[in-house]
Length: 285
Image (cartoon, rainbow, N blue to C red; front, side, top):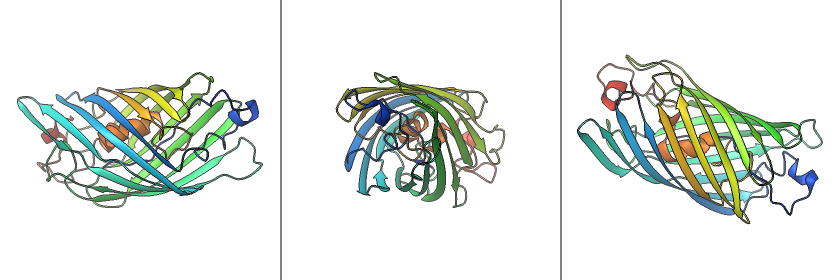
């Protein structure tokens, strides 16, 4: 399950005023283009022996200043021992609503989302969960100090055998020429047989290229055997600006875009031992 529920802090353009650059509202995604997109490529490895390389395309449309809809089709290749497969990845569709209370301390931005994942594979494939799933999510971004942003989001599946819930937390600092971020992700729920719940730390940096185009480098390291041992991704496009926990522009958002929900929540897809999507079958435990 792939959920585009994430947080991003991006470098403000040098032409912006200091007051605008320091505002949580100005970086919350309201200034992003009505039509935006981006490409993310990456690699991921699990301690169980599975490796994956993937490429995804993020397409985003904002019909209203407070509402955005997006789709993220992709293509991937996975190997596990002598077995390998490649093909389209699951395609997530998401709708995100945002609210920013005017004249509030710390310039908060609140978010809520509903999403669904259209499965393109069969049950048991390592590139997807083999079934259509749905999830809900919520997020918050605040700026307690100028150019410093604290963000959090959480997501919960509302369909069975669609993975566990997850919660992400991170801090970002706008330096003008770059925006580095550090974060922590925790899986919430029941682990698959022989697996542990995923816990990981992540870091990344966003670099402005030209106008709304940004270049981002992101990676994570698993703190438990249930999490990917490591992930790395490179993103380029106009859809990676803002500090919205629901945008595709954060460290966790970009990783989930290219790898799906297993980048941060690797268990809960199988409620019965020996299922085609169990952690043993997928090599993630």
